Image (tube, rainbow, N blue to C red; front, side, top):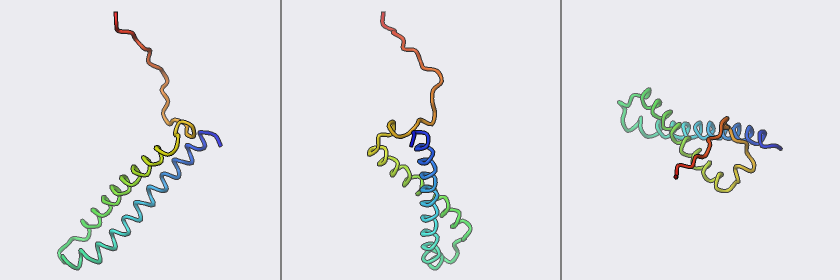
Length: 99
């Protein structure tokens, strides 16, 4: 496989991983929310609670994704297997400011 294919497969896999973590964390918090919070505080507005669960699930998936990506970058030589997503068109010229 070439670098571009590796990069595309990584992006697809990472996206699926991120979405899966968000869905699982939302489902777990959703079950815990209706098992404990609604019974303890009956005045809790479920619309606000579910909205906050959604935001919390996105935040959890973001932090889990970053942690897993950090471990992956430490273990795998990224430049060897993946193509850069953004390439500079123009290279900066090195200037010698010392006279």
